[in-house]
Amino acid sequence: MKEQINSIANILAIAMLADGEPDEQELSILDDIESDIEIPGLAISIKQVISTAAVLNDEQLTDLLHKNSDALDETAKPLVFEAAITLTLADGVITEDEISNILTLAEALDIPAEKAVARLLFQVQEMEGELLVDVEDDLQDFIVVGGKTRFTSWDAYAKMLNEKKYPANLIDTLKTVNDYANPKYGSKAIVNYTPNFLTLSCTEPVSRSKTFCFVRLLKDSLKFEYNGKATFATSAAEFNETLKKEIEDYFNQLSKDKL
Image (cartoon, rainbow, N blue to C red; front, side, top):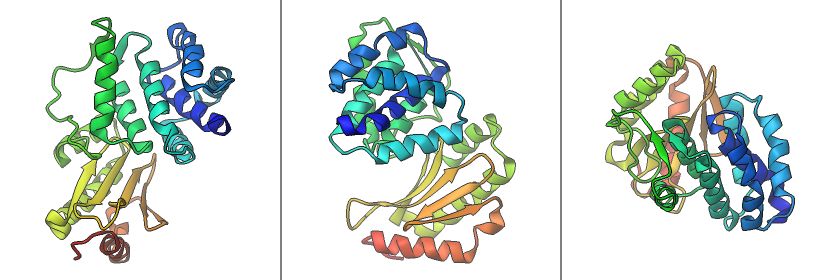
């Protein structure tokens, strides 16, 4: 994995920045992480990346995460995810934002949500009560239901977007996509709601690939990614018939149950 050191360093730096600037506790275990992953020089590489990544906004960090996750081979991904959890828990506190970040990391690293949660719970258990779980009392809108589902409904998703002051025009556009997709695809597909994406996935894929459209939430636009293409939209009107048709065509390529 030595040749992947830069990608690994970027991913772990992003994990450390989830709750702001890394403290001494987090920095002090980097040598242990380097030893566990067996990549000489990883600790100093992470420290170097942190200073650069710390000035990036959420959108840029998300892009950086996915770019570097895509560069990893399959054997490296579980090890990097395990290290990311260790770094996240290093300060003895876990917050809702950190939980969200861990699950976002899992999604980027192609780790199923149920396995990601299991690994997180295992490390929490290993801390034997030394961890403070700092989350809000009301969590009925936020659950993990396998796959990539994070919020249980459009209403819960919209509530989160509004609380984070996401632009109203983009929320309206996402609602248009949601209101179109549910009746259009019915039981043939599922709409998944995550903090950084709204995704459309086949329930009966012909192969391992099941997501036929990623709607990436950018700062001032939505980015529709499907079949190797990318289309940007800032209003509901831009989710037009041409775009719908191209997404539907890709669904029919990936799904056993065609439209």
